[in-house]
Length: 212
Ligand SMILES: Cc1cc2nc3c(=O)[nH]c(=O)nc-3n(C[C@H](O)[C@H](O)[C@H](O)COP(=O)(O)O)c2cc1C
Image (cartoon, rainbow, N blue to C red; front, side):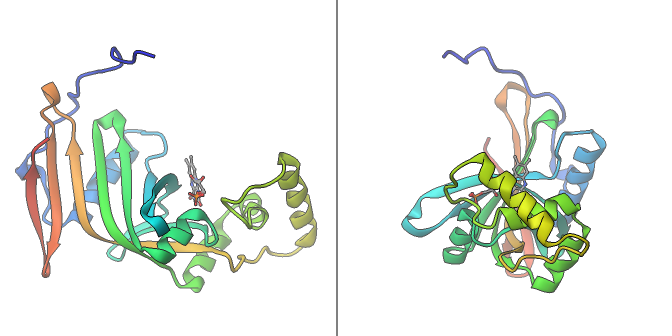
């Protein structure tokens, strides 16, 4: 399979020192708002990479649900592959591929579980179907026998909680990733991309331009 002609020039914008805000949190908010305003599909989708026992990396998309001074929050099953990895090694990478704007943001940080009260508030806002699905997918990342296993599980959980609110399972909740490094990447003409890295040194964020 020759994919060599699947290439394009990146000409959406340049990124210069004068465009950068001093705080990477403000810079991220600026770019997230721009991605939302530009109508990018799933602007909050991010690839979360983890490394667990044995050092083998793994990656998957999850949705960013909250962002603020404490970091980046996402919700998942605590028995999943990613959660087991984080339990062993809390260092993660978050990657936002905003290709329609020739942009990517890469964040390195440390993940920790959100307090369950915090997760419960979010869980209550989810559509009922998604709440049921969280119960059905109890053993996320494990081998299951069939699709029918899921459909049957959905019926069973729906019947179990009929007429009542669906509680958050104790195997489900959120992680917050406290960042210590950000990279903002803007694709440039002739593959001369603009890359800026923010790194936390003592109490300040140092910014460096990186070679593309
Ligand atoms: C667009 C999109 C959004 C997703 N959002 C989530 C999410 O917010 N939480 C989650 O646990 N899985 C989400 N998934 C599923 C994950 O990619 C993954 O399959 C699942 O979490 C199991 O991952 P693991 O086995 O590596 O732990 C999403 C997948 C896609 C494609």
